[in-house]
Amino acid sequence: MAEIIDGKGFAAHLRAAIAAEVADLPYKPGLAVVLVGDDPASKVYVANKARQTVEVGMASFEHRLAADTTQEHVLALVRALNEDPKVHGILVQLPLPKPLNADAIIAAISPEKDVDGLTVVNAGRLAVGLPGLVPCTPLGCLLLLENKLPDMTGLNAVVIGRSNLVGKPIAQLLLQKNCTVTMAHSRTRDLPALCRTADILIAAVGRPETVKGDWIKPGAAVIDVGINRVPAEGGKTTLLGDVAYREAAEVAGLITPVPGGVGPMTIACLLRNTLTAAKRLQETK
Ligand code: NAP
Figure (tube, rainbow, N blue to C red):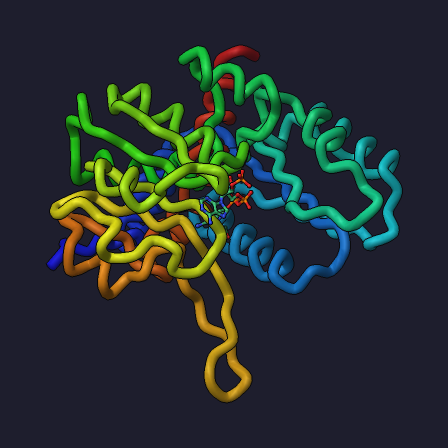
């Protein structure tokens, strides 16, 4: 049976370490979150982010805008936040309602305050190995892995998924750790056979229970990024990962559960990125 990686507990330790560091600063790091429209899942995420930001001693600035807010208005807000010295991190909650152009809005965020790591500048810095701000979920995956596997040199890593938000940055981070990285996607041939070569398997597919137990190399570390809401009994919904957890846990050496694995690390890493951004901005003042 695999050892379960406790992302919830790890995230709590990380938040405590961030809070201790924030308490020692002569200023208060600030995180601004922009929420446009009233997507129910986004509202819950933003409320959780704001609560945890305040809990670690940072300032939280919430900007809730109506769904019919114009592109110009959102861009003007982002530019104002770029200039605001109380704001060290800016996050625009995605997805944005139509017809807003998310790429143009993300591009307007100052790379120094881009705590989601989504600007082209930060993606480029990651690709060439320069210090920047790394997307939160991939950073969370890496911290969980590093804690259990301090030396990943030479390990075969397979990343299923090639999104800019998850798959590509995770692959870059694992490459920096000297893994031999293969990226898989919907056009990959014989995905089960490829997965069986993986010492580290990252599933960021967005399809419930895609990875089966017999796709996993015995003893491998399996990181399940997926968050899939699927209908359950009584008209309720349940959360499933991208890995068939029970059968996978019988073969893997390490595995993250869903929920309680990667999920809690995302907000913790957002706070970590905000602290990193604040310290760098302060140093260059
Ligand atoms: P995405 O943009 O939809 O990307 C999904 C990737 O999976 C694509 O590269 C796609 O390939 C690939 N794929 C789809 N079906 C496949 C199949 N049958 N076989 C192999 N590859 C397949 O999703 P994402 O934003 O990266 O998110 C991935 C998952 O992580 C989702 O479940 C999402 O909810 C979750 N997530 C969790 C967190 C968190 O905080 N834990 C944060 C972000 C995302 P193509 O490129 O060929 O289409």
